[in-house]
Image 1 (cartoon, rainbow, N blue to C red):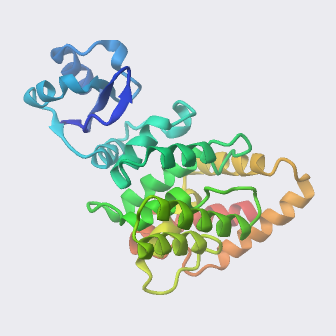
Image 2: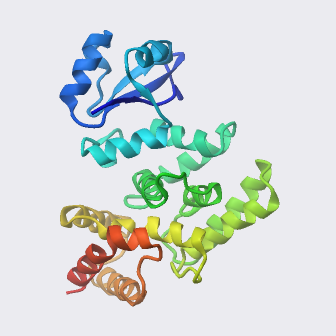
Image 3: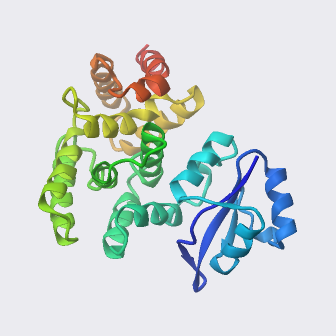
Length: 289
């Protein structure tokens, strides 16, 4: 049992905030917070928000400082994490924390991508999906962080989304090339990000292409969810295509499911297969039936 604290990176109210969590129980977390004089109003479901002025004192009191991605992973592993869908719909602050870990100092690009992922017509392909893909990448590469090019590809892989298969991925890749070049990334790295984005059009990475395998598995990780989570995914996908009639949607969706089931393997990393392969095939076969 331990208390963890990530760096004060979240801007709000003229300062920056950290998250304080327990890896075992909310009771332990509340006990620590009371002893440290943290007010109850700072509690947000599974963590306390604490101002950066309190950081050193909390570490001195026994909180263990860790990177943001490590804290999130420990919270998920504890079973205490509140799913993103039950949080504030904007998800701006958790996504900002992750952005600052991969490309700090490029706030304008972050805000542009955040706006794109938050477009009104997106129901499944929105910010919750982006955060889920980033969290899935953490699980696939733990304890090491995911490669930067893979993380950036996750940020860009549905940056353009109009529901047109193939065209969306191509336009997202071109956006990545343009904006990452403007951000000063080496041309080779920007090209790699765009290559990975294009791969998500069919989720067929070449054998031995580890970066593409990581992104493909993270993007498809939703398929391996529990039945209730999978049902929510299907409902959100249907909303994404609300402009299409039921019969046409059912036919198109069945074709997508068959294409996914034809992928062998469906997940291309050993860790991805361990985490999601069996459940994903059960969910897909059940949906098709």
